[in-house]
Image (cartoon, rainbow, N blue to C red; front, side, top):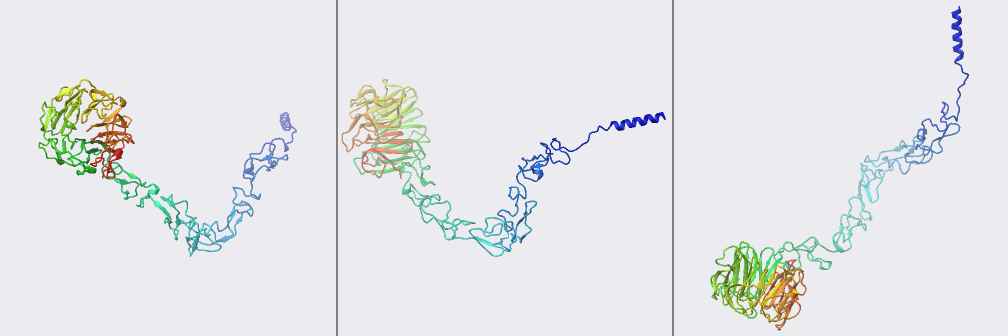
Length: 628
C-alpha cells in the first residue's frame, strides 16, 4: 500500500511540474512569420515579386500588419500595361490580328488570366492556298517578300492573282521588289561611273529587268579609245602605238584592263653603239637592231640618199648576242655561243671573211676565231676581238693598228703579242688600238699622229707599248685621233688631238700624255666609244655629258648645228635625259639608253641614224628612237 502511494505521488509530481504556465499566441512585428502571417518585418518567408504574381523580382516588402506590400513590384497580368513578357493585356493585342497570325479572318482576343493571345475567335488558315475571309492573297506559303505576306496580305509593289495566288512585281511603280533590277526612277545606287562608264545617266529598261546604259558615255573595254577620258588604248585598239612608239623594241604591246598600255612583252634597249653614219643597239632579249646608212660597199658614203634606214631593223643572226660594235662602215656582234659575226663594208678585209671589196648586208662569221670571243672593238676599216684573254686583229693596217709589227693589211684574224696578264678591255680608234690587262695596265699601238698612244710622242708603233703614265684602269675607248680611259676610282683621263675640245679638259691643246677631265670628277659610269671628234660620258647620277665637236648638235645640249664650226672644250650636259645607263658617239651623232629601256639619239640625221622616222633633219636635243 505504501508503494502505491509513492508511485501516485511521483506521477502527480511529474504531471504538474511540466506545466510552466506559458500560453503560445501569434505576434505581428516579432520578426517571426507565424502561420497566419504572410511576412513579418524583414522576413518575407522566401517570397519575392515573381512568387506573388508579378514579373520582376526586386521590390517586395512587408506591411505592418504582416501582409505583403507589392507597391514596389512591377508588371502583372491584368494591370492594363502591356509588358514585354506579355503577348497581350486586356484588349491590347499590339499590331497583331488573326490575319498576321496566319488565319484568314476572325477576332483576336487576350486571355485575362495569362495575358496570352486567344486565337479561338480566329477563322480560316493563311497559307493553305485558298483566299478566304479577310485574306488578300494566299500563295500556299508563308515566306515574306514574295508578294503575299505571311498574313496573306498583298505586299507593296506586287500584284497577286489566282488560287493559289501568283504574285508578280508591279513594273513602273518606282519600287524595286522581287527579281526587278530596277523600276522607273529607282535604279539603286548604280551610276554610269560605278558601271565603268565615264559620264552620262543610266535609266531602267521598260521591263524592269536591266539597267539601260545607252545614256552613258565611254567605257574601258568597249573597243573605242576615249582619249579625252584618259584611255591610251582599248582592247585591240592600240591607237597606232607599238613597242617602238613607246621607245622600246620587239613586239607584243597590249592593252590592260585599265585601258593603259601593257608593255611587258616589249623588250628594253640595253646598250648602243654608233658608227660613222649608222647606229646599232642590243635589246634585253639579245636581239641586235641597226639603222642609218646601209651601204655595204668599200666606198665611204657622200651625202644622201644612201639606202638609209630610218627605223631600227632587226639583224638576222644565228642566235642572240651579248655585244654589238659599230665601225666606220661595218658592224660586228658577239653571239651568246662565243662566235663573232660581221657585216657591212669590206674594203680592207675588216669583216674577217678572207675576201676584200665584197661587202655584205648579211652577217658573216669571222673566219678562224671559232668560239670563246667575249668582246669586239671596231676601227675605221679594221677590227679587233678579245678571245680567251688574247687580242686578235684584222683588216686595214697602214699605221700598225693590228699590232703585228707590220703595216700590211690582214685578211684573217691575227693574234697580238701582249706582255702581262690576260686582256680585259680593248678599244679601236680610227687607226690606233689600246688594251687593258687584268692588272689595269694599258697598252697601245698604231697611229700616234696626235699623240693618241699616250707615249709622249707622235711616232707610230706597230707593236703594243705600255703606257706608264697611267695605271689602275678598268675601261678604255678610242676616237679618231684621241683616247680616253677610266680609272677604278671613276675618274676619266684623255689624251691625243684636242682641236675641237674632245679631251674635255677645258682647252683645245693636244695632249701627248693622259690628262684628267677634272669637271667629271670620279663619278663616271660609262664612256662612249667615239668615232670622230667628240665623246660622251654617263655620270653615276644618270646624267649624260658630251664634249668636243658640235657642228651638227651632237653634244645634245641645245646648241650647235647646221655644220657650223661649233665646239665645247668642257663636257656639257645633254638636255632632258636622266637615268642614263649606256651611251655612244658616232661621227656627228650620239645616242643613249636609259634605265627604263628607252633609247634616245641626237645630232646629224642625214642617213636616218637617229632612228625616228618623224625626225627628218638634225636635232641638237635628244629624240626617242622608235622601232617598228
